[in-house]
Length: 288
Ligand code: NAP
Image (cartoon, rainbow, N blue to C red; front, top):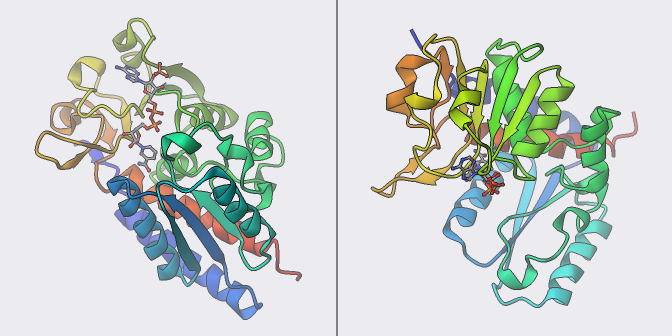
């Protein structure tokens, strides 16, 4: 039978651990504090930022959403981030993407200080990932980290596996390719210009889709051997306006060994990773 890689039980288990860690920090005078910068009112961003705040508060951390007007001018926007960078009470800061057009040219990875960059976008955090050096002292991008946690918690081997990642974005595909390579997987990073994509996906042990096209991946991408694991990162809306992944779950599920659902798969793991990174940032302030 196909294994459904749900994140519900994992989330429950890790939430318990995070609550304990948070309590430890509070007892040592540190209240983990995240600031989320939200510009405008993109409906998906409103949902994502609210979920992040809710989860931080659930584990006992503090989280403020700094909701800024869509028309905010660049200097005011940069001043707000600069103040957060200087605020010693704040341990983590993320800028919710996408930003409005007039701010989208900014080099987002460099705006939040390296030690508060719980999204793992700062060049120094990316360098640690790229070089596989002192990773524990840096922050790993949340979605890639969450995918690895999901695989590990389900006892899915990564080392020596062949992985096809579809999608080469800075927030998912590229850092994930690095992270899995560091863990000794052999990774093929695919994208919209990849030729014969199905030939690649049919050959690998693990297929990870991060494209953003509803139901793109169907059984024609899957090997006949029923020996593959499919991870669906996509968060799209279907023709009925319902949340769905990149993978056509119904058409793929009987052809694979294991598959993540949407919702209840990768999405919650991203928020868990964010909370883990926030506590990692906060722990640096404890002098024990
Ligand atoms: P993105 O920046 O738009 O990148 C999409 C990638 O998919 C690009 O590399 C693009 O190739 C590739 N692509 C597009 N069409 C393709 C096709 N037909 N065949 C193969 N590759 C194709 O997307 P993203 O920000 O990484 O997000 C991807 C999806 O993951 C979205 O649904 C997003 O909502 C979701 N997401 C979920 C989470 C989570 O927590 N679950 C977190 C982040 C993102 P090119 O580079 O050649 O254009």
